[in-house]
Length: 64
Image 1 (cartoon, rainbow, N blue to C red):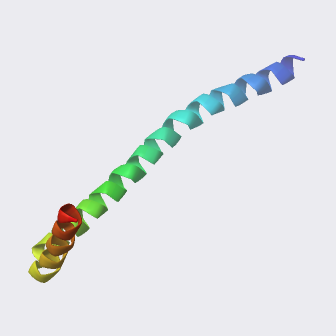
Image 2 (tube, rainbow, N blue to C red):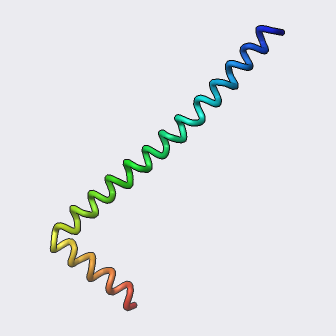
Image 3 (cartoon, helix red, strand yellow):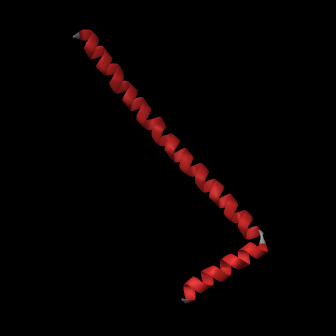
């Protein structure tokens, strides 16, 4: 009985430890993805022809 109680206690502690780093890891992944997408958007804006094409498309969608 005592051993089972100890094992359960350890498992509950592990769950608590796993939940926080996992959430942090997910937040970190989201952060990396946003950074990468922002960088690619900046690179796209840096290229004028692509920027013009994007502007034309967005203007069409806005006017229509």
